[in-house]
Length: 418
Image (tube, rainbow, N blue to C red):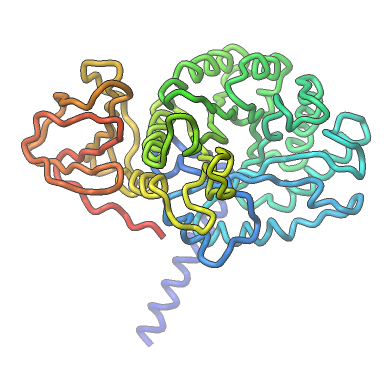
């Protein structure tokens, strides 16, 4: 009898906790992340039904977000009839592993217009489809993105910023009048197209967007994006409605291992530096492109952006991102430390137990020793790929192009990923 009472009491407590959680406003239950690890880590995917073991492998890498197309053509094959069942399958698998989605409203639908929706009929149909989608997934923590790279060939028949704005405004009104709690972001431009971005801002899209998204692809190192982020932040500050905070996120960005001068090891270190650079510049989320290689052509860079191969074998970039996610799990970014040279990056993180961790690397030049400003009688050094070593009484560490981590004081074992 005592045991039965205990079981009943436990059930009441769980019910109470669940009820309390559900009583919270939607955006408190499903917030945009604060810059940190692993909550700011995501990856692009191109599936709705995962292969056996695929979601577990993806989650084990440390990702908390995915981004994928939410196809108009694929979910409305008969006018006015919406079939979201494929995305229901994906959502169930995401929830199992505590992963949230960015769904991209795209592209055209031949039922209404060839190319992107620009006519009144096509725009109206697109908005009806949007209303059905955000209503169907209204309790699932989705972030909805307005198109993919509308400033290049993904807008048909050719890019037109005014056409894009007309559709984005209509979609924003649809969401705010039907499911106003839903997260809505844009414009997801290719590169840091400041002209396209500012035109969107000038015409009021920051009134309906909750965050600004872009794809900072480049041939140069990830740290070079910092100046672009400052430029976008200045535009947000100038055009955003009074008292509205509009964060930034990189909703797609990666480095192919076949880029000039690139290889699998350099791809791995650029991935980690990309995530860390973005976190240190207050980006709330970074989506790495891509989850797995798209092919095996040894001469096609498009086939080699993945963290795993076409056969789902982890590449060095997989291990490097997993190490980042495990090693800094639960730590939040504090500031960049001045260690004497602009090419030397040293980021300070702290967790709730007030433990301190450093992430550090060199962007150019030969490896060399650097005096760290914070010392401890005990430190643990972790390599980019997860090798641990004792660094007791370390006064200097060698900075290389590969990120490393150092824990100052006793560091607990990182939480295991699912």
